[in-house]
Amino acid sequence: MPATMRRLLAEGDFRLRLAAGGAADDAFIDEPLSWAHSSDLADPTPWLEPGQLLLTDGAQFTERNDAFVAEYVDRLLARGVVALGFATGIVHDRIPDALAASCDRAGLPLFEVERRTPFIGIIRWVADVLADERRERLQWSLDAQRAVARAALRVDGLGAILLELADRLDCWVALYDSVGNRLRVPGLAPVPAELEPVVAEAVARTLARGSRAGLNILDAGDGITLQTIGQRGQLRGVLAVGASEPLDAAGSDVVESVIGLASIALEQRRNLDAARRRLRTGLFELLLAGVIDVADRTAESLWGALPAEPVRLTAVVGEVSGQALLDELELHADQNSGRLFFAERGGRILLITGNDEFDDLQALLLRHGLRAGTSGPVRWNELPRALTEAGHAGRAVSREHPFILFERLADEGMQGLLAASGGEAVARRILRPLLDLPLRDREALAETLRVWLEHNGAWDPAARQLGIHRHTLRNRVAAADTLLGLDLEQFAARAELWSALQLIDPEENGQ
Image (cartoon, rainbow, N blue to C red):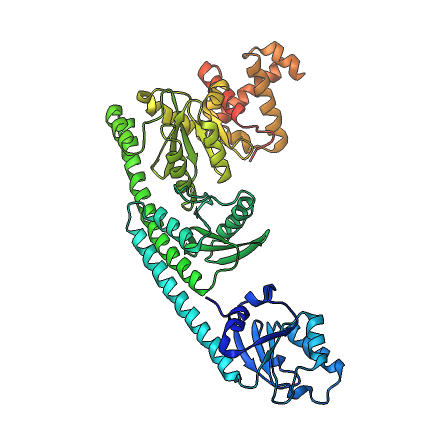
């Protein structure tokens, strides 16, 4: 129990009497004392700290006026002194009226210390109580840390240590993973609804910085402590602890022990997730090879059935940096058993969902700033075709269209597939001699060829649209034939030229 004025006044051996500045039922008597100090200086405040009890025999009040007394009391109150003890029968026979009046006005508790009660006895009592309290808190901290360590040995060690921490601190506790998702632990009290947005935002800011940090925030009278888990650049999560008042050293020590154990548990969990992802990759290869029954039984025994047919395959475009996406995919797969299967293959992340389940998945990828191509709906034995379709769709993504469905390319016909398959580069090689011409000549020849091809190689209607003689048109086409090395008398050559002109616009992208 802490040292308080209530306990001090209750010590019969000291024979203390409350004289002014409060009553026996005032809240001040339950304020913890940080120390007891004696001084007869006119201004002892430079040597005092908040929460202390000051004892004096009143020598400083000899031949002092009321204004000095009032200023003295005000200085003590401003410094955070809890109470003033005045010894009678030494310098003063009784407490000066001016001092009692000033203490009553300021609300500073003033109590009388009889001559037979030495100051050192009061000071020693306060010191002993503080020492006992420190020992009690140290023992409490050791017992709590041992209990947390025992909890870590249980089957669900991570959840068990969080439950033990919440019980020992008598407060709510929450653990957030590396992407800011709160881990669900059965039996653990949730974050208060009114505080959840505040905590979630603070966790997101902390994780975004990527460095180890401790943060104390205050909202609606509730103290919230955030502590990161993991190393700089490799944060594993954030531990949030909510209490009605800031944690003392003993409570902070218990939290630190939990952080250490949670770091180990999360690292083990990440290693397990990495092993599971390697297994996912192996199962994907089985699915790709058509060994569907074995892959399905294996998946169901580990984390749930595979998505029901028909399925779509989504291929993430480009490399994925960091662990955040993989962590969130694991969480998403756990929470949506039978609706998502994902794997890593050849440096790419591949995701398989039901035909109507990929919208949520796109929202997840969008949060990570990623793009992806998605196949059309297929049966499991058609997975190789889905992989090819997703690859084609992925090559057509852009900043304006970060997600492309293969059906969209199919709707655009062969030109869409050619564009998605890198046809632009081939078109540039075919049209390179044309693209190397001066701008005016390039534009004129490109327009001539486009109009001629749109009229299926018919000379008269094409010449009329261009406003030139048909012999001029023939000469231009013959020049293009020689320039490009194509036999434009042949349908195949005309089709190739038409496709190349559709894939790039020589008038805009000449070089």
